[in-house]
Image: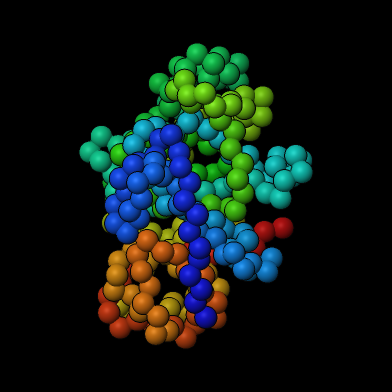
Length: 268
């Protein structure tokens, strides 16, 4: 069975007033969340959240806690995430980790002064790149990007710096969980490589071409179409939508198709 997830559009100061098709919206939308509004507390949509992000400006410099830290605060989980790049302007950048390691005191002072923006390692990216962002990674998404984010279903962010925007910072919470050093490039899957990402909390795989559902994958997962050629189980899956599928071992497609598959992994 395939279920189309419901869209929730979120206005952001760094969002875009003109979104690409099929997301046309006059508001300054930064994020589109896809959720199952009929969740029974058991399916994978309770564990994973998929978002589309559209940026015209830099997002805040931020960090997410791991499960242990989040649960100590009474939350269900921390936040692990990854990004699949749909489009990147020529000058678009991602801030991932710091250029060099520093101590917590230096990091806090840089967050207060704004120097942390220049301490970030701003990396070039292109369509098709996958970037895994473990908890503790200091990061920021630059302007000129369209991307799909797959994450643990937790809305928990500690903001370190926000370019003077009048939003709350969370330095006391961020300092104990932030890794004040470089990003581990083993967590980057460049465009053109076989994109299969496995992490403790979830996996992501790109399917590109004709075929059928791979035998080694779970039967319950999230489908994210990337083109308009995909028909599964008699249902045309539209790009710009996200679907929850269960018992998908019998599904197949005759025409070449491009889509992302995401599913949670069992954790203690």
